[in-house]
Each structure stands twice: as structure tokens, then as C-alpha cells.
Length: 239
Length: 159
Image (cartoon, rainbow over all chains, first blue to last red; front, side):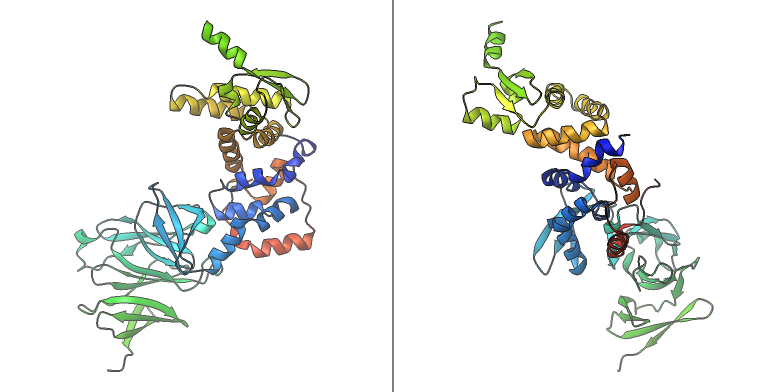
């Protein structure tokens, strides 16, 4: 390896070459770290188009992921501005994304007869940044042969796991009856709400420490976590 | 034979900063955009001086342009990989600057890609050590930057 005196001019590389290099950094986090190396690189990164866009991206949700000609790469589209971010392409599993929350994307990783594995990826942090959750178990009367990567209707975080490392929860609606499952950081298993057939859920949100769901008849249901890992659903719509 | 002669008479002379003269074919010369525009602007029989390029860097660029004309895609890939491997970090930087000046498009693709690969997933401390860059931030400046971009510091390779 070169000694500092020989190669320190890397910090004063012409801007056009810094641009050529940083344009080829695949992940935004690599790009941002690059800017933390020295003043020269910092001022380049700070003035650059891509940094501005990165901050802009962070402040401009919702964003749409869309497929590109390369099967493995997805592009990013800003809905409110009607523009495509050419600077960012994400290398993601060639699977259906079944939910997103705080910049994290949820994919169904593996499905077998009785369980379903979710994988959580934050493309802004690079594709090494993943979270694996315990498998979700199917309910006995879910028709397993109809389960596939479309088996999850929705899945969301209560808080950004990148900020609240040990204090986040996840809820998922899955299976034929859109059953609700809940996971809290540190748990070894998911907790499941009782299935109410014909009243399957169509949506769920975290709202001020509450888990609120809507069923197919537009009833609002408040889910509370009870001891012994059970989840109780209370109908809170006025009839 | 006749063809060869006409090619050599068409050849373009390039004078590097350290006074070495290279004769290259128009095919090679035209792949350096800066030289291509100089040929168009001036009489091509004249020797073109390159005040920002030394003989080592020019010989490397010519070696690349001649070598990458291999027949198969995999042979080109192999050649490119070996070409990059043979360069020290110091040579890589010097050559990158020369390539940027001469605008050799293919090397302007390959070389930054190689450097980007070196940077990917690496910690800030590793990058400083690797590229021999002195940390010129004050401790409070560095703390502020790290706080702003804390999200980017997870998941780096072990140094």
C-alpha cells in the first residue's frame, strides 16, 4: 500500500474525477461516508447534486420504486415532483415488495407449508442492512397451497428500527383471511389476533401507540396486546 | 505491406511532459477525445504536446487501448482486471488524472468503477488509511458530520 506522502493527493483529486467515482458508488450510505473522509471530499459531496438529492429523497416521501431494464435494479420516483432520481438505483431481491415503512422495504423471503419468512431491507443503508424476523405461522384453516409471495397484504413498523434499535414493533396482515400478526423487538415469536372469518382486515396502522385496523366492511378495530401473547380486537366504530 | 506503410505515415506523434515522443495510429489517438479534437483543430502531421501527461501514463493508456481489442468479452474482462491489478495506488491516481485530461472514455468508465469498488462498504477510518488521507476535520466538525449522517455508519466491513 502507498504511504501517505505518496498518495495524499487523493484528497485533492479533480472534481470531475471525484464525480466519476462517486457516481459509481452503488449505495447512498457509501456516498455519504465518502464525504466524511476529509474536508476536500466533504465539500465536494456537500456541493454535489447527489447529496442534495439524497437529503431531498429523505424528506420527500412517499416515493415509488419501479423496475428497470436490469431485473435486479429498481429506480426511484418522486410522486409529488413527478421526477425520477437517476442517481439512485437499488439492487433488491427479485421478489414482490409487500410493504414499506420508514425507508425499509419488506419482502417475503421464503414460504413453506406452515410458515412464511419476511426479510426487511433498507436500501438507503445498503443491501447488507437487513433484519430477519421469526417466521410467521399460518393459521390452521389458511389454505396453504394458495400461499405464495403474495401471502402478505401489508406489513409496517411502529418506529424506525434504525433509530429505535430495540424498541420497535411490526404488524403484518397475512394469509387468506388477512390475519393480524404482531412482533415486538426481542420476541422469539409473533403474536396473532384471532381470526374472524368474513371480516378480514383490509388495512392497519400504528397510531399513537395503538394498532388500528379496518375490515372489509369499513369497521375500525382497535387491537390491544394482552398477557399470554393474545391480541384482542375491539370494534370502535359507531354503528 | 502497402497498408502498413500508409498507416505509419498517418501515425500521430504525441510528446509527453517528460519529453518522450510516442507514435500512435489514428485509431488509438481517436479514442482519446482531447487528442481527437487537437487533431481536428491543427495539422495532424504536427507533434502534439501533452503538458499534463507523462510517458508512463501515456504508455499505460496506449497499452490499454491496444490490449482491450481482444476478441472475446471474457478475454477483455480478464485483460482489464489484470491491467487494474498491475497498478499501484499511486499509479492508479496519476493515471486517473491523465485519463481524465485525455478523456479516454473506456478508462473513464473502468478506473472510477475500480476505485468505487475499493470504497464500497468501507469505514471512514479505513478509507483515510487506505488512500493516505489525513483527517483535517476538527473534532467538533467531525462529531457534527457523524451526527448528521449517523444512518450511514452501520454495516461497514471490518477494517
